[in-house]
Length: 77
Image (tube, rainbow, N blue to C red):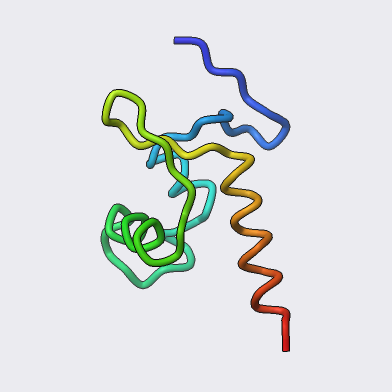
């Protein structure tokens, strides 16, 4: 399987495991199950996700944009 990695070392379409690593969920979350954290982010915080053959994939560009939008909202007074 060919995966083209970008400059940060993640594929353009990340699996859930890659997303967990990219967002550093084990380092920043008190949740014991990273899958539950990802599901919460999708359900309540509009984490971008697409499904291919019923498998969730996370577009790197969209996830980075989502993080930037979250940062911008937190910076507003």
